[in-house]
Length: 248
Figure 1: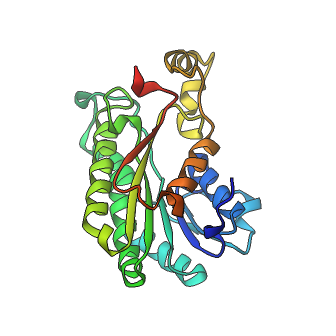
Figure 2: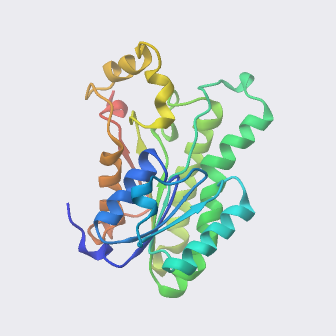
Figure 3: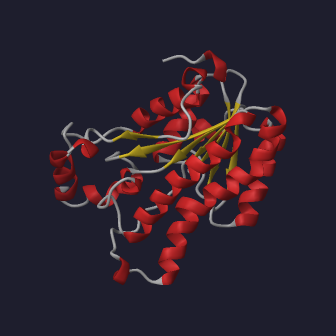
């Protein structure tokens, strides 16, 4: 899959050191893009050492640190043409009575507020240029219950609403915003499902119509399309990639 428009563009990815964020980073690099790669953990060496990558260590829950990381990345590689707000965390599938306020705030800060912070920092320059694309990470938990606990489900529903409003507010000025809703993706975030005999992972695969977990690279491929000029008329929507989970 080749998208020539990404050559010499700058892409910003949060959660870039592993899972879907790393797959997105690699996918855009393969297309010739420069990548501002933000994560609280170091990037793999083969990515971190590339001249077209500006790896920035930052916790997306830390507004000041995140701001500094974006500033450093923009100084190194330029204003992003594409932003992938991918950083996220689960909440151990806890119902509301099992969640304390600190956990609630932590999950929403990671999964939702970080997207607001990143967007508001880079959006003014995109508007000045008249072009910018956001691919925000939601989840099937943003469309139905059961994909996470109360905090995660609330955050992902909010991501979808935020994305729709972002696109509605700025589409006429050259901005596109969409989000992806993954189902069962084999990433480090879901490692607990594979622990021990992997009973939970097997159950999830069995309950998924496609009868398997997806690879993060499959989500990255969808990201490339949504960020490309081929999706220029795709606005303010959420695209599931769930092996048919929502079709049940």
